[in-house]
Length: 143
Image 1: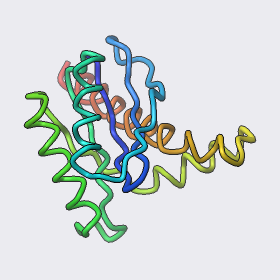
Image 2: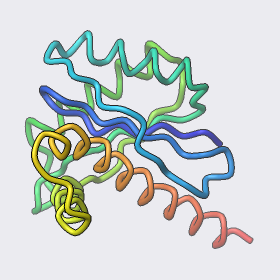
Image 3: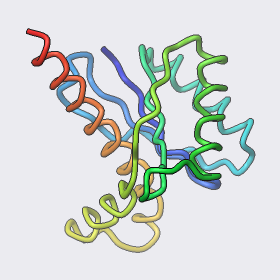
């Protein structure tokens, strides 16, 4: 299944996709958009043009597992994406993905402006890889 993941941000929103076999998640792009409605619309257009079958939206719960303002905004983002695309949308716990992405970019020596332009797409890949691992474990558990 072709899955798109979204790491929503107020200025930059990372997008990643996996292949049909759900073996490899890859960064796709970063949407540079501060307008919430426009950002959702651009994400929906990407989902359609890239033939996504499912969308996973990062869900930034607080460390104590509560839902804050940021998570609520991501829920709204996911709901609007679902309306615009008619695709299933899964909210996926993304705690610390941006930190993990920054760590990965440090390890690969990506710095400066290039780093700022890719960190959100890398975070979207981490979200998608986590979700794909969950799906694989669910499938293995049902066999």
